[in-house]
Image 1 (tube, rainbow over the protein chains, first blue to last red):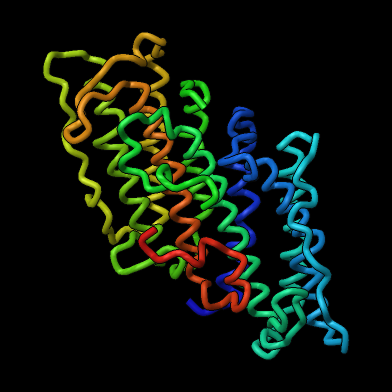
Image 2: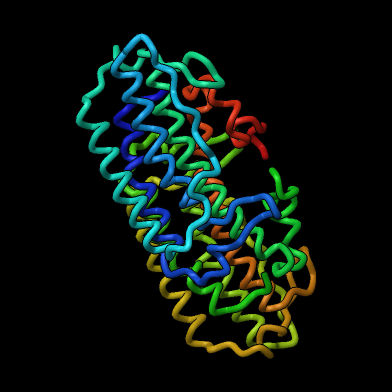
Length: 176
Length: 176
């Protein structure tokens, strides 16, 4: 499926509500579940998404849009804001507010086809386009939704007993 | 995480709203996306979940609860109700209604620890307990949420360009 802004924005808009519906007021053991010692819990993933709203997607799109001669992105710290003492409900609300503002910014730019081909420089990946950045924002959202749901599924790997055989997700090692 | 009914019910209750929030009024190409020729689209997965509400979880729990001498479950047809001409919004509403009724039934039984150890006979897996059946219901929900989100992510495998390198979910073959 090729990238179309009018198909991408509806996904970006829904993510905070999807995550709030799934996680707000859920018993704490689900929020703190993790697939392995190094894996992120659903609560930590919300912190990571908050950090992305602040430092990654829109700031990088802005660098691309400005088209100054130096347009290298700051590295994104994947591990920033993972930990928090704030309740999950507060973090979900913060994510929703940041996302709403960022989607409004994106809509306000009213990007055209020619803007989608503008480029910036990723610190590791090299030249990337606006289109690729925005597609990655969507993929980042839905792959973290998938990760949270998978993490929850794996909590019951033992509890399902013989049904393990029917769920591929319960058979993979924790790093996949 | 051992199975606790009071931790499982909140997940079962949330699934229809999570899926409606994610999929209702989303551009059709997301609803019809599939990871491969044999894979299910998000729309088809909703049909599969509807069929489970009608024929699988509560009917099987009822068989276990009755403790009659013959308590073998009917086989579950994984491919029933996949296809539908009805709009996705209608199907999401039907799933929500069926699920609400089924969760009310489950709550109404007021199951105790001793009920959780009662058994039925799975047509392929043999003896299973009420606890295992209910844990599997939860795992089935969240693994299909993960599947839908992953299916959506993979639609942009090409669109993200060099960012593919950062997403394990974009690197696996379609059947995983």
